[in-house]
Amino acid sequence: MAADLSQIVKAYDVRGVVPDQWDETLAGLFGAAFAEVTGATAIVVGHDMRPSSPGLSRAFARGAADQGVHVTEIGLCSTDQLYYASGALDLPGAMFTASHNPAQYNGIKLCRAGAAPVGQDTGLAEIRALAERWLTEGAPRPVARPGTLTSRETLDDYAAHLRSLVDLTSIRPLKVVVDAGNGMGGHTVPTVFAGLPLTLVPMYFELDGTFPNHEANPLDPANLVDLQKRVPAEGADLGIAFDGDADRCFVVDEHGDPVSPSAVTALVAARELARNGGKGTVIHNLITSRTVPEVVRENGGTPARTRVGHSFIKAEMARTGAIFGGEHSAHYYFKDFWNADTGMLAALHVLAALGGQQGPLSALTAQYDRYTGSGEINSTVADQSARLAAIRTAYEGRADVTLDDLDGLTVAAADWWFNVRPSNTEPLLRLNAEAKDEATMTRIRDEALAIIRG
Image (cartoon, rainbow, N blue to C red; front, side, top):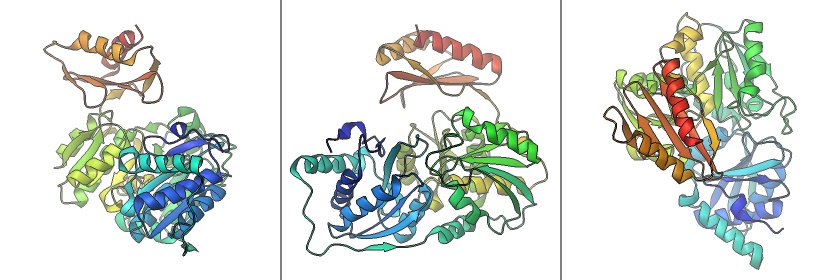
């Protein structure tokens, strides 16, 4: 096919519409390119429940095997289950998923052995260049001794590993509603939760990559509505929603009210610090709540602030030896999970924290939710740089304000802050604001938006 790889090879992964933008032929070229760039003699490959995933995954595996690479196929899995396999088997890995995107999309998340990320600066650009060359010149010839394709089950081992990291044996019985969104949570949750003192109320556990009930993107409030209604209707203690490839988890309390991912980050950070003797570095990106670094310090840890994006979190985790990292997008990273992100492990921490005391989740998380946030607000602009410069002009020189350029522009005062970041792919500026109270947040948010949209 005549493919424009600049449209589907993103900063951190491959993502595009099938078959319009990519197909099994191109998947085979990506497999061969992955083999060459990693220099691996063996890799592991898995896929989600999308209709196109099995064919794309197998084509990738064959492309790698034709270059002499032995491929372990783990079949249906969540993204963090693939990371588990990459870490436990010490093999580079490829996960076929488009995460929360609609059904017509598919993609590949790639990692090196030990679940180390592959992005534009760590091999993805080279993989794209090889695939582009082979699209023009023809696929590379198979080697004389091709690799083998072997199937392997990893779900039970994945579940056992997660449960070895969080002690749930002595928690009080809990009733939990889980919305899998017809994604891979419906595959992993029953095995991970098996034998725990939990009454599980499943929602949309049927694996269906056409997403017949709602998009598997809990970051969009519209996709949480069903769970928010079901939790109080069931008299449940909490609700958990997973995205399509089940690497992110979102939590709602007993009233059906969403728990901020920053509050979950702070809660898990406190638990991980306690597990490590009150010492350790915790990574948070710069749009997480100020609550996170406060809680980290209060529990003896060292907070480290990074840019937004999983490659930055993972790089800083590796550099600092951090024990945990969290993003406001509900990605949670653990040193004991090869620095990779796993929403399932974060969910187990929430269950352990709730079940280890008698109060409701709303009371438990209140201590980790100290400020009022705007959420992310996108504005279409004609000139990103000019709008950022206008914000800088409006605030620089004020004695009570500091500015920094770690990721976009962050403007901060004693009791409020906001960050404005340009999108890399669209003519957008993304605003996040937070303050000590609703009135201050609203004032600061509206001041910033007036300049952005001016």
